[in-house]
Length: 282
Image (cartoon, rainbow, N blue to C red; front, side, top):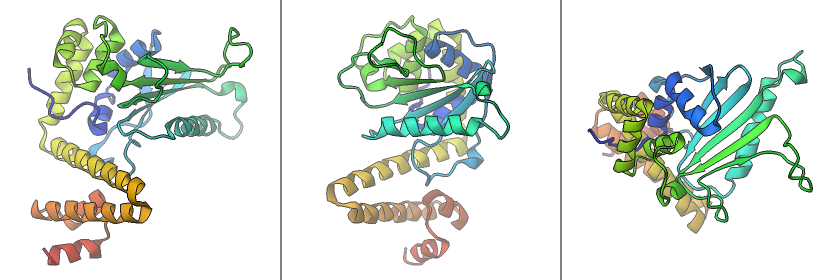
């Protein structure tokens, strides 16, 4: 069995994988614990549309299930103290964007937010998978308000647990996390969709363009995270300077690989004149 060179947590691989409706359907059935007849992906994956210099994590997946609910799935690898507020903001945006002029409120579809996190966000809860709904605080036994459901999956907790690998959700998490090869092997033996997903990732990563873009995305994520960390410790001004230096370092390496000025501009966000100055001073 070939190893996956880059984890499925890499957002490009993640989004490529779940651009396949049959795989997404199997995953959603596992996490939502319901039968799904139809899945329609709203934002199809395309390497040509990816912008490396955008904020990490914006490559989320939007889908419609059974013509009754909108689902937003995001893989987030870097810890953010404000993440829950961000999720609520995104949920509000989905709900507002769904209602067009002349539509009736009763036509609004339910919104389901699924957040797969590579860090711990709820330190006082042991569960790997938690589901949050709107309830009246003094009557928690009563039914939650309809319309919004938020899922959090914390992979850090999953890695440190003893998961039942005959559980379909755990099988998918083993593939997404890509850390425990034994768990992945069991998952592929038990679920043909997991095996199919692994094979699709291997095929995808065998393509030169896909591999190059994934590598650049990973490098950019690490540089971005490092710069943000520096900004937190030393101040925003110093952080921005380090981020700019990281862009320049990446530009130098890409110039050495003979990428075009336009390609480097798209990847780093630097202006053309700035890239030319770097090129002339190499």
